[in-house]
Amino acid sequence: PLQLPRQYYRHLGKLLHVCYCTPEGAEAEIEGYLQEAQLNGVNGDDSADSVIVLKPKVQGKRPRNAQPLENIRLPLSRIIKAVPEAEL
Image 1 (cartoon, one colour):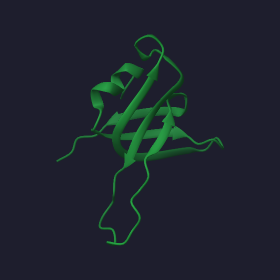
Image 2 (tube, helix red, strand yellow; image 1 turned 60 degrees about the vertical axis):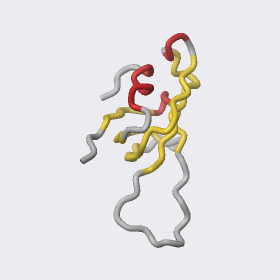
Image 3 (cartoon, one colour; image 1 turned 180 degrees about the vertical axis):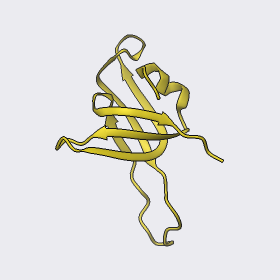
């Protein structure tokens, strides 16, 4: 699992499995590609307003006329665990 905010830079473009808390306080999971990491503070150590952007992974086939999935912005303060996944 990713332990420090600065580790997100190394995994840009890679598949992550993320467990996080929703604004309502429920726990949720998402699997997606890390598109962007906006880390504030010295070396990204201040996670108060740091954010990552994930592009959700598409499961199975989608219809041709389906709307593209929107990127998801997650504050680091809400992330419980982020684990890089291997792609084959």
